[in-house]
Image 1 (cartoon, one colour):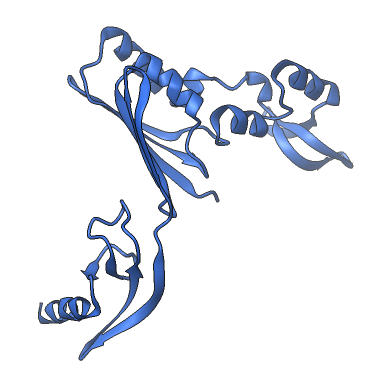
Image 2 (image 1 turned 90 degrees about the vertical axis):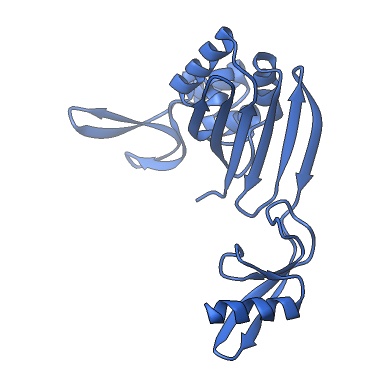
Length: 233
């Protein structure tokens, strides 16, 4: 399974009639990437080796008829025409080049009201490509965009007048090797965050190691004091 990148776009101004129509089209398609740069329907086959009728095939299609599923190999001549027309032999390489991620944006959710519109989505391994955001910016000149991967690297951008005016990026958080903090009656494994990171509002310090959502303190003394408070509850 891929690591997912979680992303969001916020348009914090009332939508025009044309923008509302575009949002509705994106909602209907179910993908920002597919709306702005649709993947050609000719790539409706599987790329990956399979043995069909005793012959190894690199490209093939699964067809169902009368409840029976049949695997049909794709002729090389068909692949050659795709390469000549689009520059890529299969859906995977086309998607990486045009969307920067193999499935585009997935699980799209759109929250729209009279004064704003928020779009949230996921993508596999990488955020969607800059060219898709540039196309979005032509229709929605003013918006903010953020993304964060499961390992907690990510970034943010602000667009005004269709142009990115501010951008910041951050890497995975730097953690010191976990250590055990003990007081009488309670023991907790803790990790120490060594540098400031946008995902951790309390900044540098000790966090309970299990899911790192519990801040214990900036020093070992503060962490011990937090555990003592927990024990009294």
